[in-house]
Length: 348
Ligand code: MRU
Image (cartoon, rainbow, N blue to C red):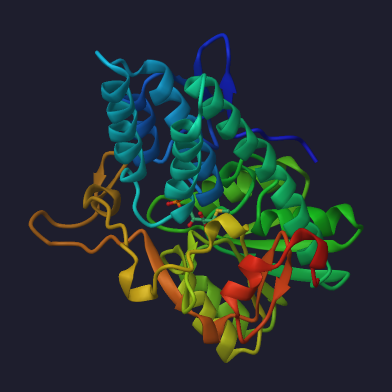
């Protein structure tokens, strides 16, 4: 497999370098970011996207704030960093990894007794180092669920580009292929921003993994005609009662359930939110232009309103298993027990 590193800290730059995901698959451009404002723009525009990658970006963002903020007193400095952390946290509301990364690094910054800037950067780096380890563990646990020859449907991009490398749902596929399994992937294009067509297809094809792109509305047809053995998706937030992921995921889960196809969610523990229920999670709605304009064509008549939800919620009863770095959980999903499970008592 060809290594992809989605974003990283560059000491010489004193900032973040990242693959600009809005330009793929036609241009592979490494962009840079040395201010919190630029980072927020990159997150809002989905130059950096995908829940675990947002966790890493959030962590580095607080480190960036610690380096760039000034204050007339140490209290003013801390207030300024807190303020910037809040702005980063709010830049996308649904993927809980973003606030998790921000809060983890902010806590380390606030607790530091001497060099708070160094402490913040060290914590952000720790998140970036842990992420691929989680993905590989998820990959190994998930690969065991796939048969030696199978066709898997996925939605959006839960790959290396959505993490710092390897991926969650695509990490399962990569690990299965690495273990010698013959996995074919059906990638839903994922309207309106085409993360499936542009990003999932790009990274799998680059690794020589068999991938075919379909329109989102083709999924039910191929599930019905028996061509799909499993559906695997990532997640942006997992509450006790639902899995939040890219809009369209719920539709695939309903179809998979109707056709007796296992529906797997692959996500690190940083994506779990034991504090909220589905109803309490903010669902990101994005701009009209993402639906109404394609290139230089207008697709929707002026004045006609649109609804552009970025995510939906899939109730737990439609999910066959959740694959985490600490093992596979099956219904009834006991999220609190999972979160207290230690690395030494994993139950694959
Ligand atoms: O809007 P995006 O592209 O950030 O949405 C990403 C997804 O929905 C992914 O499936 C999710 O973050 C899981 S990433 C491992």
